[in-house]
Amino acid sequence: VIFSDGGCQVATGSSAAAIVIRSPAAGPVWRRDRTSTAEYPLQHQATHSQYFMQSTVNVMEVVALIAALRVAIRTQRRSLIITDSRNAINWLFGRSNIATTNVAKPLVEKAQQLYSTCAGHVSVARMNRDDGNPADAGVKTAMNEARGIGDEALFDSPPAIAPRIRIRTQQANTHAAE
Image: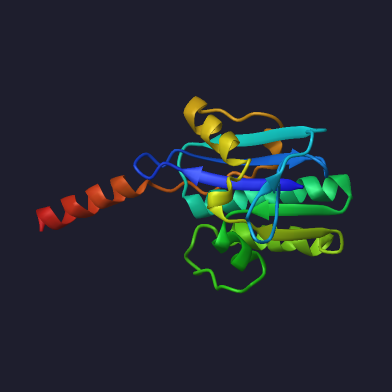
């Protein structure tokens, strides 16, 4: 099982993507009815993350998904990738159009291409954010420490974008000058 997650701080644009790889019998197993979880001994867990200066949460979710797909392709084993991003899942499977101007578009296309090479042995599923994505801790650590851990080469560099607060400030200054 490979958990993927991405996050960003809206004010600064500071962002990170992370994946957590767990052996099949490791960690909590969520039942479909979400009434309880069962804990199993952790046989193996590896966390990989990467810090980026400025991006968006949607871009980071796709960057994390790409890293998870790379791991699944490398291992050539049956894998389950779990993300908490509805947008990343919908974009991956073409259920939602991504705007041609969206900075995530080239990354989504890369994720789709990677998935097409491993669809026979890789499944991708979405979990609820409230269930606690294990990769979230890797995202928070990378953002807090401004550095990645593990194999940072798994992560593609997203296109640079300005954080929203800077864009809003520039827009406000433009309107005030007029």
